[in-house]
Amino acid sequence: MPEPTRPALALCASSDLQEGGDAVTFDVIEFGRTVQAFALRFDQVAVAYLNRCAHVPTEMDWQPGKFWDQDKRHIICSVHGALYDPPSGQCVGGPCWGARLHRIELKEEGGQVYWYPCERFHPVS
Image 1 (tube, rainbow, N blue to C red):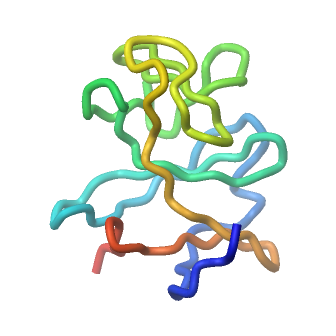
Image 2 (image 1 turned 135 degrees about the vertical axis):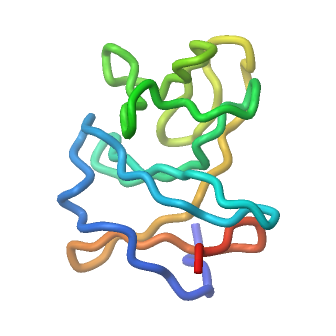
């Protein structure tokens, strides 16, 4: 995937995202409203998504930063039980089969994780 040309914004230290650990949450502006997003690590790769279930637009964590199913193989919606593939954000089980979470592009460099604002997601001022 080509690296975006937009300036990246610092999100957290790479060490804040532990394999199978809690997510780092952050706010973004989507369509003029502040919404929560999250970043976590799976198979050594940092990924980020909007914290909104593809089935019904509700925040998915069952406690702040808690997005993993019991086996820490899938992102789970605590409200509907939908299971999402961490690398792709695609729903692989539950009421929204085949739908996807909204991805936020990340980059890891020099021990730091950065996120890229885009046409849809803007930084909170």
